[in-house]
Amino acid sequence: MEENQKKEKVDYSKRKIKKMNLLKKEKTITLNCPGLILTNMRLRSEHKHWGKGQIKSVMLEDLCHSKLEYQSNPKLLIFAGITMALFAIIATVVWQNEDGGLAIAFAGAAISFIFIIRYFLSRRQIISFPSSKNGVRMDINIKTKGLSYNEVKNVIDAVEAAKNERIGGLK
Image (cartoon, rainbow, N blue to C red):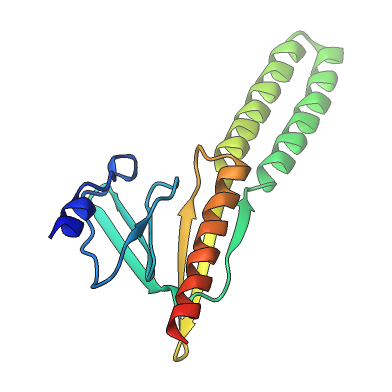
Protein backbone atom coordinates (compact mmCIF):
# COMPACT_ATOMS: atom_id res chain seq x y z
CA MET A 1 0.00 0.00 0.00
CA GLU A 2 2.80 2.39 0.88
CA GLU A 3 4.51 1.69 -2.46
CA ASN A 4 1.36 2.70 -4.39
CA GLN A 5 1.22 6.00 -2.49
CA LYS A 6 4.79 6.77 -3.54
CA LYS A 7 3.85 6.13 -7.17
CA GLU A 8 1.04 8.67 -6.94
CA LYS A 9 3.50 11.36 -5.82
CA VAL A 10 5.60 11.17 -9.02
CA ASP A 11 6.00 14.71 -10.37
CA TYR A 12 4.77 14.95 -13.95
CA SER A 13 4.35 18.73 -13.86
CA LYS A 14 7.13 19.37 -16.37
CA ARG A 15 5.61 16.89 -18.79
CA LYS A 16 2.05 18.24 -18.57
CA ILE A 17 0.92 14.67 -17.90
CA LYS A 18 -1.21 14.08 -14.85
CA LYS A 19 -1.08 10.34 -14.27
CA MET A 20 -0.05 7.05 -15.83
CA ASN A 21 -1.52 3.77 -14.66
CA LEU A 22 1.38 1.49 -13.87
CA LEU A 23 1.42 -2.23 -14.47
CA LYS A 24 2.16 -4.72 -11.73
CA LYS A 25 5.82 -4.39 -10.57
CA GLU A 26 6.28 -1.36 -12.83
CA LYS A 27 8.22 1.67 -11.58
CA THR A 28 8.81 5.03 -13.23
CA ILE A 29 12.30 6.19 -14.10
CA THR A 30 12.86 9.94 -13.97
CA LEU A 31 13.61 11.59 -17.32
CA ASN A 32 14.18 15.22 -18.20
CA CYS A 33 12.18 15.05 -21.42
CA PRO A 34 8.67 16.52 -21.62
CA GLY A 35 6.14 14.15 -23.17
CA LEU A 36 8.18 11.00 -22.58
CA ILE A 37 7.61 8.57 -19.71
CA LEU A 38 10.05 5.75 -19.02
CA THR A 39 9.37 2.86 -16.68
CA ASN A 40 11.26 -0.34 -16.02
CA MET A 41 8.90 -2.08 -18.51
CA ARG A 42 7.85 0.39 -21.20
CA LEU A 43 8.40 3.67 -22.95
CA ARG A 44 5.43 5.97 -23.51
CA SER A 45 4.92 9.26 -25.27
CA GLU A 46 1.88 11.42 -24.60
CA HIS A 47 0.96 14.56 -26.46
CA LYS A 48 -2.09 16.75 -26.22
CA HIS A 49 -2.16 19.83 -28.40
CA TRP A 50 -5.01 21.94 -29.81
CA GLY A 51 -7.68 19.35 -29.15
CA LYS A 52 -5.62 16.48 -30.53
CA GLY A 53 -4.16 13.79 -28.34
CA GLN A 54 -1.79 10.92 -28.96
CA ILE A 55 -0.45 8.17 -26.75
CA LYS A 56 2.14 5.69 -27.95
CA SER A 57 3.41 2.97 -25.65
CA VAL A 58 6.05 0.34 -26.40
CA MET A 59 7.44 -2.43 -24.25
CA LEU A 60 11.18 -1.90 -23.78
CA GLU A 61 12.10 -5.29 -25.23
CA ASP A 62 10.42 -4.28 -28.51
CA LEU A 63 12.57 -1.18 -29.05
CA CYS A 64 14.93 -1.58 -32.01
CA HIS A 65 17.32 1.33 -31.48
CA SER A 66 17.38 5.01 -30.66
CA LYS A 67 18.61 7.98 -32.63
CA LEU A 68 18.87 11.73 -32.50
CA GLU A 69 17.90 13.58 -35.66
CA TYR A 70 18.26 17.18 -36.64
CA GLN A 71 15.62 18.36 -39.07
CA SER A 72 15.54 21.65 -40.91
CA ASN A 73 14.53 23.08 -44.26
CA PRO A 74 17.77 24.23 -45.96
CA LYS A 75 15.82 25.16 -49.11
CA LEU A 76 14.81 28.30 -47.26
CA LEU A 77 18.46 29.41 -47.10
CA ILE A 78 18.82 28.76 -50.82
CA PHE A 79 15.69 30.84 -51.48
CA ALA A 80 17.13 33.62 -49.31
CA GLY A 81 20.36 33.66 -51.32
CA ILE A 82 18.56 33.58 -54.68
CA THR A 83 16.18 36.34 -53.58
CA MET A 84 19.03 38.53 -52.37
CA ALA A 85 21.00 37.99 -55.59
CA LEU A 86 18.01 38.73 -57.85
CA PHE A 87 17.03 41.85 -55.96
CA ALA A 88 20.67 43.02 -55.97
CA ILE A 89 20.84 42.62 -59.75
CA ILE A 90 17.50 44.41 -60.21
CA ALA A 91 18.57 47.17 -57.81
CA THR A 92 21.82 47.85 -59.70
CA VAL A 93 19.97 47.98 -63.05
CA VAL A 94 17.30 50.33 -61.65
CA TRP A 95 19.90 52.44 -59.84
CA GLN A 96 21.73 53.15 -63.08
CA ASN A 97 18.57 54.31 -64.84
CA GLU A 98 16.62 56.04 -62.05
CA ASP A 99 16.30 56.44 -58.31
CA GLY A 100 14.68 53.64 -56.32
CA GLY A 101 17.45 51.06 -56.45
CA LEU A 102 17.97 51.43 -52.71
CA ALA A 103 14.30 50.63 -52.02
CA ILE A 104 14.50 47.52 -54.20
CA ALA A 105 17.69 46.39 -52.44
CA PHE A 106 16.03 46.94 -49.08
CA ALA A 107 12.96 44.93 -50.17
CA GLY A 108 15.23 42.07 -51.29
CA ALA A 109 17.06 42.12 -47.98
CA ALA A 110 13.76 42.09 -46.07
CA ILE A 111 12.41 39.12 -48.04
CA SER A 112 15.72 37.26 -47.63
CA PHE A 113 15.61 37.98 -43.90
CA ILE A 114 12.12 36.42 -43.71
CA PHE A 115 13.44 33.25 -45.42
CA ILE A 116 16.35 33.09 -42.97
CA ILE A 117 14.06 33.52 -39.95
CA ARG A 118 11.76 30.77 -41.28
CA TYR A 119 14.81 28.52 -41.67
CA PHE A 120 15.78 28.96 -38.03
CA LEU A 121 12.18 28.33 -36.95
CA SER A 122 12.10 25.11 -39.00
CA ARG A 123 15.06 23.56 -37.17
CA ARG A 124 14.12 20.70 -34.87
CA GLN A 125 15.95 18.17 -32.77
CA ILE A 126 14.05 14.88 -32.47
CA ILE A 127 14.72 11.69 -30.50
CA SER A 128 13.35 8.64 -32.28
CA PHE A 129 12.71 5.24 -30.70
CA PRO A 130 11.56 2.84 -33.46
CA SER A 131 10.04 -0.49 -32.53
CA SER A 132 8.93 -3.49 -34.52
CA LYS A 133 7.02 -6.56 -33.48
CA ASN A 134 5.36 -9.13 -35.72
CA GLY A 135 5.98 -6.93 -38.75
CA VAL A 136 4.23 -3.91 -37.23
CA ARG A 137 6.44 -0.84 -36.99
CA MET A 138 5.81 2.04 -34.62
CA ASP A 139 8.07 4.99 -33.87
CA ILE A 140 8.06 7.14 -30.79
CA ASN A 141 9.33 10.56 -31.86
CA ILE A 142 9.86 13.32 -29.32
CA LYS A 143 10.77 16.93 -30.07
CA THR A 144 13.47 17.95 -27.65
CA LYS A 145 12.85 21.67 -27.65
CA GLY A 146 14.86 23.38 -24.93
CA LEU A 147 17.08 20.38 -24.12
CA SER A 148 20.83 20.48 -24.62
CA TYR A 149 22.74 17.79 -26.48
CA ASN A 150 23.96 16.28 -23.18
CA GLU A 151 20.42 16.18 -21.75
CA VAL A 152 19.21 14.39 -24.89
CA LYS A 153 22.12 11.97 -24.63
CA ASN A 154 21.16 11.27 -21.00
CA VAL A 155 17.59 10.46 -22.09
CA ILE A 156 18.84 8.01 -24.72
CA ASP A 157 21.27 6.45 -22.23
CA ALA A 158 18.49 6.02 -19.65
CA VAL A 159 16.19 4.32 -22.17
CA GLU A 160 18.98 2.00 -23.34
CA ALA A 161 19.93 1.11 -19.75
CA ALA A 162 16.28 0.38 -18.86
CA LYS A 163 15.93 -1.77 -22.00
CA ASN A 164 19.11 -3.69 -21.15
CA GLU A 165 17.89 -4.29 -17.59
CA ARG A 166 14.45 -5.35 -18.85
CA ILE A 167 15.87 -7.87 -21.33
CA GLY A 168 18.20 -9.22 -18.65
CA GLY A 169 15.24 -9.69 -16.32
CA LEU A 170 13.24 -11.60 -18.93
CA LYS A 171 15.90 -14.29 -19.39
